[in-house]
Length: 406
Length: 99
Image 1 (cartoon, rainbow over the protein chains, first blue to last red):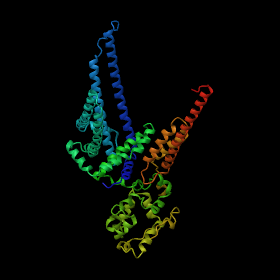
Image 2: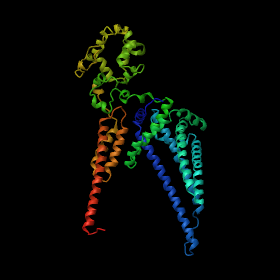
Image 3: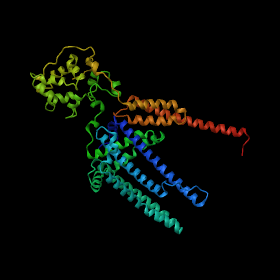
Image 4: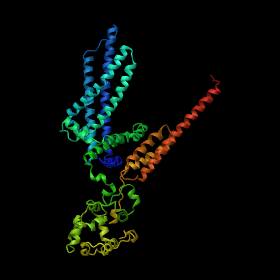
């Protein structure tokens, strides 16, 4: 993958623009559900503890009040507690998978929905539960040598060998763990994108995708350290924004590995925005659409970006130099008698104001005409090009000095 | 047509939020950690609001104000600590407590 880290982050921010409310809302919903479960768990736990203390006091003191009949026994409460805790873990796990799906949707350029948070509840939920149980078991197994050595050291009293063993084991474990984690880092996203895939198939695909990209992924993860530090300074408040940003960047990395990053995210929003919608600094820097058109051709209207797509060249150049790739305009100029396509083009409501004013205003036709008159531009379309209308001069037009010099 | 065309739609609300939070962070920098909390939030929001290759003006304002608010907050904390230490030392000295 040859996409720079900064570009991935830029694409993620563009993907999240307009989706921040959904992301933060999903986080708040998740926190609310987690809070409700915590309250319920605490209620059952303290009820069981109270019942236990009451029972103990009944054993050791004859004056203690007898247990009220009809209430739940301690064993029942413990069973309820375990079941509730298991349900809590499963719900949180499936919601975390829903988060991955949410980030993936946003990174793919789709409109995020809060309901996606519960996507995993209806798409192979037990597969994700099984995966998490297996991962937890594997992580548990890796701690067995540590437990055995610690126990042996405690029993024998010789801690020197055990300390060296634990140190070496921890270092080796960390290296192997990081390698495995990086190798299979795309595993969840693969399954989230295609839940019908098998576990081993997803593992193999992740391994193939990450071959040669582990370092990039590692550096991408490290690059969020500064923002995470700032989020910690804000007492976690900034994490509401940072968490979707990190998740969406990781999803963008996954799409980058697959080569399916949406093209609209690679372009500036000013390029893809409607002609009469300006954002951010663009509005302050450019006062009129005409000035925007002439001074910054890169920040184009949809019509212009359409013409830019084949060769990524400036609109006027691609238009005149490559008539075969500019079908509507080329057709128009090659057939000057048929003025209908041009009219129908102007009449399109979505491509409205600036384009119309541009073509209809006489001052705007100056660069077009001067362009045609140049002998070096000898495209056959130029000789056949009809004269642009010269009526209705607009006093708001740009001065000729604003026009591109041919 | 230009009357219809020039309808500025400024939807970079995160940059605006960054600027607002950054200014508030400067104002609250003398309060308890207000500058650090809001200043760091302003910096994060400013960083996340950049969807172009350049910073929005308001995001830049929020970034600078957030940094200033954090610095002022840290400075205010140091001054308060030094003042409390000095006051404590003078109080102990005034009470005749030396060892």
